[in-house]
Image 1 (cartoon, rainbow, N blue to C red):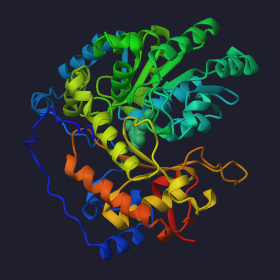
Image 2: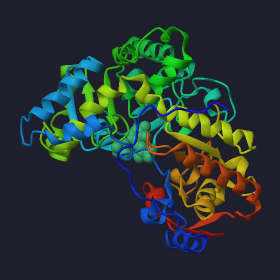
Image 3: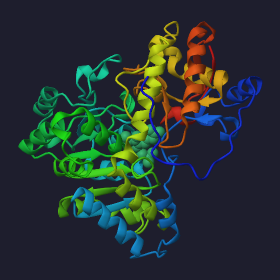
Image 4: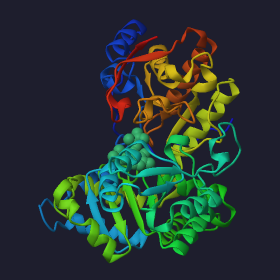
Length: 454
Ligand code: F0G
């Protein structure tokens, strides 16, 4: 076995508790079998997400103490803007309170009824904002990207032929922008290659369509470029980052993942595009020099962005995830391969192959895993989709339970505990039944919908 090695020491700890199984059953029932509705006090290992829950470094904490508080023109903001210019080489920046706020602004400015947004794969909040503006999403990930068991190192790649076909079909004038998502979240944190991004960029340039990068999971993508892509091996993380940015017109990100802090923002190369989006920031987010972020968050983010350029900082997530995936595979548990970033993704379609998609197998498995272990994962399958306007279900391509590994938060023995409990549940999978909605919200239903056993 390849054991990952922590390149940090732990100097602040947070006490955990492991509630007994009877209490776990009671709590998940109260939560409508929706892991989003559990209270963290009732959770042992919170693997719901890597968003806003990564460990901060001593340098980030220190920077938070020297933050310059002011409504307008704070030195903290200038430091953040300078750092972003330094690493991405784009001149303009708009701060936001988090990633989906960037998506809101991009959708408001670029998307109108009939407009199409081709992307390697959708993210829940991205798609919701685009469809809210009357636009639609075209998912152009390569067919290989949807193969659950694979050795393809870049399952997040876009299919260039499909991109050309979609532009041809709708006409370049109806393409709002093309979106590439680093560390493609919903297919298991799978990266795209720098070479693929370059091809996408060429097609965009040919047709005069802006290329937008969702860089929320850029840290993982950079690590995989560096370790899996031959022509990147001799490049530094900083060089790969700049090469990536140079291919794009706009880069937006959730700083809850990138930079291991809070907040978000949009980096823009072109002044005209910047001016189109700028008015929406004071309207929805806050003044142009904070955009809804606190100065402390901005200081932590500035340091976090710099730390993202350090391979020994960004390798921790992928290395621990790689270990967890390898251990589960050895025990016969169906998982997404190759291991990606963000977390370990269990393939619920195979894990509970007796539960039909209409009964939300991934939701059922996430709920059962909490009962069996006190571990909170997240459903990433049909529950996370939105119904068609006529009320019919959209069955997800993949039914996943995502067990996020917040960066530098869990120890190897905690990961071993997770592996042990998941393997136990797999051996006893016949105990797991399907779910049905009791209360179903219309938009982003997975966040607060309530379910019960079928
Ligand atoms: N884009 C990607 C790829 C994301 O993973 C997320 C958030 C967002 C945009 C939205 O950013 O949360 O700051 O508003 N993903 C979180 C997750 C919620 O758990 O995967 P946000």
